[in-house]
Amino acid sequence: MDPLCGGTRATYVLVRGDVAAAWSWNPLVPLLAAAAVVLVVRFVVGLVAHRWLAVQLPRRVWLALSAAVLVVIEVNQQLQAERLMEAVPG
Image 1 (spheres, rainbow, N blue to C red):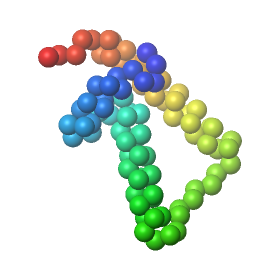
Image 2 (cartoon, rainbow, N blue to C red):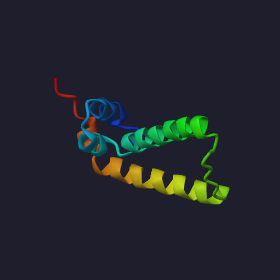
Image 3 (tube, rainbow, N blue to C red):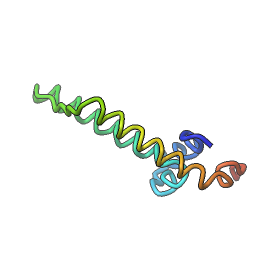
Image 4 (tube, one colour):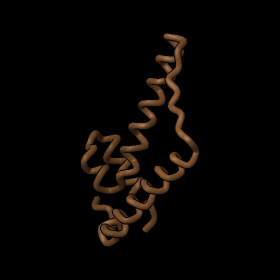
């Protein structure tokens, strides 16, 4: 299992409005969807207000956070490997 396993199923149920099920298949999908919404809102507010929100953290912090998220996602995916390998019902 890798951090992306279950991503298609998670995206499918997320689009259908079931955030809890999406989270259970792959927590990365709802997190990326939320980040996409935040970025779109930031873009629209920036265009309208001509002010841009900028978050600046050292590269080491971004790398450490990214690595920590990937490790947690990987552990989660390994813990549910049997479920992720099952055929999709229907």
